[in-house]
Length: 320
Picture (cartoon, helix red, strand yellow):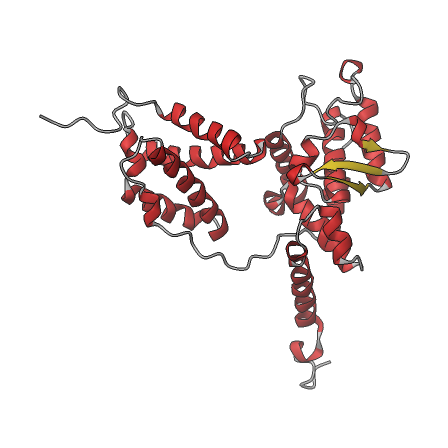
């Protein structure tokens, strides 16, 4: 008689229920933020999609402990994404399988057999100042959606705040009189950051154009969707990508809210801002995190050197 699989769906929760249990575990026991939880869910659903494609028909939950499939998935991801991205996705899968093993849904945790790939020193992707200007100036100001996106891009680049911090902003956090923004960062730490006059103008243009039913009060989210609810991180990312591709072409596909954060820090550093000031602006707990921007600036300097120095261009060999 054939032994019933440990993961027979008639005996154990279905995959969506296991996923939800893990996400609840992250929120309650790991105090994960909504943004972190969302990213975990996206990474796991991406893995589930691969497993369903590899196993046509009814999906058996024992596929989660299939070592060969897991290695195949990571190999496919490595062809398309950076080591950092693949490493993050494996880390998420490891956490999920560890949770299932601890809860008694897995006889063994095969993810323990695979090590995280070594992370190379990867510099943040930044836009040139002229590309940021092109992006901002390329966003029309005809519709409320366009004005909202222009305000978002101006704010991300002006302050360098995280997209999760931007999504949680309310009207009372913006002080136009003093030109500052009160940001709630990681670890529920608040910091005050300056906002430039161009950013203030874009925000006021958006706020003045909002329908009267959306202008509720100080605690109202600053950026709202068409239903009058807080604009989600995912919507901000998607909308930014759409506008960036339309305005910047292929380069726009690389643009994320974090790109504007990196660009803000790098451009400030190249114009003489100190590391301590940038650390405070970005809300980094450690100066070591901020120091990566010095490497970005050094790489920019090296590229300019190799492009223009006479010895590098061969001008010392009688060329004029």
